[in-house]
Length: 195
Image (cartoon, rainbow, N blue to C red; front, side):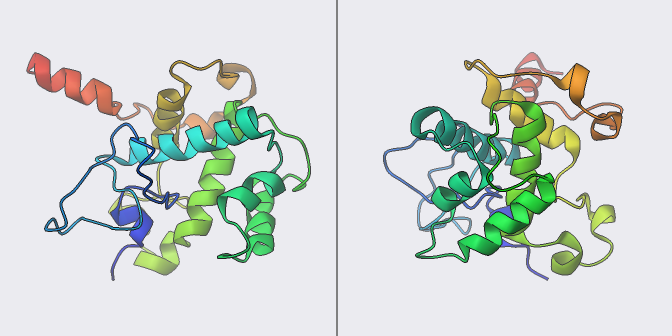
């Protein structure tokens, strides 16, 4: 079975290509490359794809005043090309919030659940897409592990005033992985150091 486009592109939010943006970690592929996608960004690592999704959500709030699930999803997935009301309902349900509750998208406890809900909506349920043994293939119920979402959050938080309430608010089960995978930057530095 073929993985969903967003998962293949390491762009689980299905961010469209735009010449005015040069996302960190975005691959500018020639048309001859089998990974080339004319419509949607392709990232070198999923951490960068998730980071881009998180940055967009933060910008929706900080630059456009979109601070509810309904407002953000109406911009993310406009009604002209999506069933936006179903999208809003699904994201709000996964976040366990009212779609019109004002939220702080810079808060880890808001941004990560919202990102996970968007990834699930964009790509479908891993069990339905790749089979019930999705966990043995390295995926979790929201496609990526909590550590992957945490790495992406940390990448998105660089250079921004982000509410980082992880130690006080995050439920212990969110951070259950004993050793999170190194971030893209750490992997690059380890390669340079010869580690």
